[in-house]
Length: 301
Image 1 (cartoon, rainbow, N blue to C red):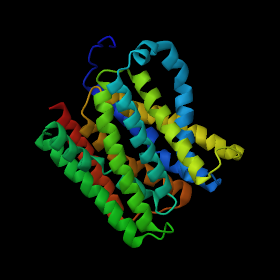
Image 2: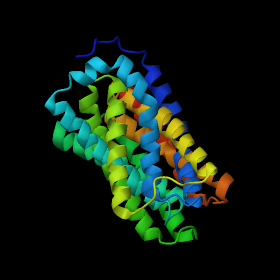
Image 3: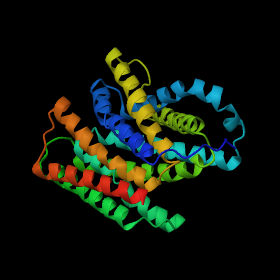
Image 4: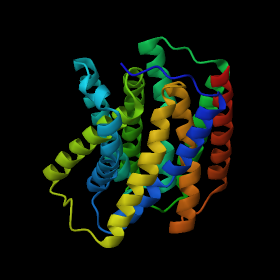
């Protein structure tokens, strides 16, 4: 068992979540750029997680060897399951960006609080505060506004319905990953956990890429630069911040904070790809931010 560590200041997990959200918001942009370079979506997901796992490997072997060698059968099963759901999340979500807009994709893939809240209540008996429920409701309403506006007024995407369904599947998979990760993180250090989760997910995606015949190598220099950026920024910095926070705040709060991703991603898509904003989208972004604030207040109470 890892040595117990003192709890951080109340504001620190919220600051870490904010930094993680900023980094993760670049994920859709990097994925689109990699796809434009001819990299298949499953390969993008595989390298995002695989490169991140490679970077973490020296730290895991040097500082987390005791945790890794002491893993129980239950912990290994949880790590494999978490990695599987993480692979499914990235495989479906990155694929959705081929068919729909960044705004719709990120809005749907971040509907985690609805599914997290239901699962936490039904499976674990967790009862969120009224303020957190209000934050979840506002955030989910904001996501729906963004989706409605984009699906009715945007011409971005070759098959919005398929892309939206893939993004929604990504949300379900990420919700399962967060819930499993919270249980696993309770008795496992951060470095050991992310090395296991990222590495297992990468192996699943490499296998899936082999089955579909997608090439893992032979990409352009620009493509490799984008893939490296995805691994270092959105994955290592962003998702590691989420994973660290799971030990100090609820999975519901982490899921609600991820709802801010559509705001950052859509703004970057406007800059890089010319995907404009509609009035309903802007209203949805405002609801998302208010919802995140209320959920954070509810978590502190």
